[in-house]
Amino acid sequence: MGSGVVIAQVPGIFQGADLKLGEKLIAENQCVACHKRNFGGDGSAIYRPAGKINTAGYLRGMVENCNTELNLGFFPEEVTAVAAVLNRDHYKFK
Image 1 (cartoon, rainbow, N blue to C red):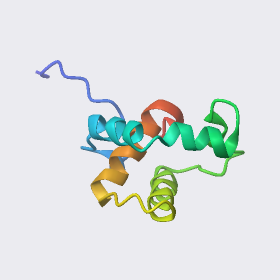
Image 2: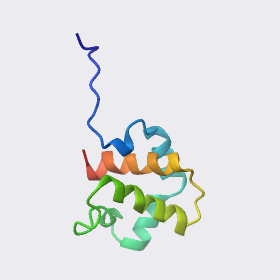
Image 3: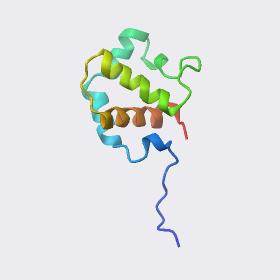
Image 4: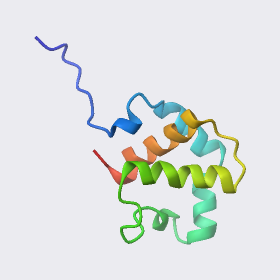
């Protein structure tokens, strides 16, 4: 029968993403502090802004936008890792 391992249902775009790497990059690049400066409060207003980000692909694209605009130098797998963490913690796309 099954191995007893439960695999969380995540969008294909985030399958195999390195969540620990995403968490590390979010912390190291002070994403939350930037969101607080630009969006006020605790910075969470950036998440789910009036239905703007409504797919996993668009979420990844928004992380890529930050990467480009802020010249963070993330590799594609790093962008995916950050987006996967945001999906896990805020968006919950399946």
